[in-house]
Image (cartoon, rainbow, N blue to C red; front, top):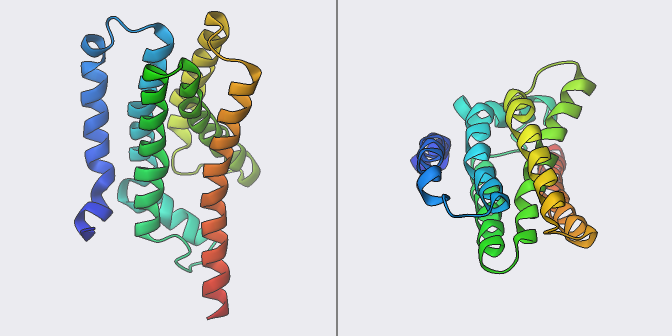
Length: 190
């Protein structure tokens, strides 16, 4: 992977988000509401990523707070986490929701909600803002709640669907935490 793509992915994502949002009324005009709300998770997440990762803010924040100045989260980590772990999982969840069963879209919803709530809890615990907090509060949590209400109203998902989607989302976030902590342990031992 080229360093420029690795280091600047967030700017293309931000522009793609605005394009996706602009095209949504045309693309989604015949979709059920639940599918539209799952679709919106990706461009909203991309806007969140812009707030979070512009000027490498999140990586620098993690390295300062958790790594105590050590590079526990690399630019390559950030790229893979966000492209594979976010874009890939949301795209997969949307595709499965559209082609197999709407409940698969809950993976995308819980990915956004877990991230948004995590930003809020971290800000409250540290009593300070963190990169991504604003879009978590303004976009993730309201969109996530509305989507869960529509899922409940449309009876598109069982409690088991919710549990599996939440577990997948928590698992993705756990992988990130483990990566940061193992990076810290490795750097501290060398």
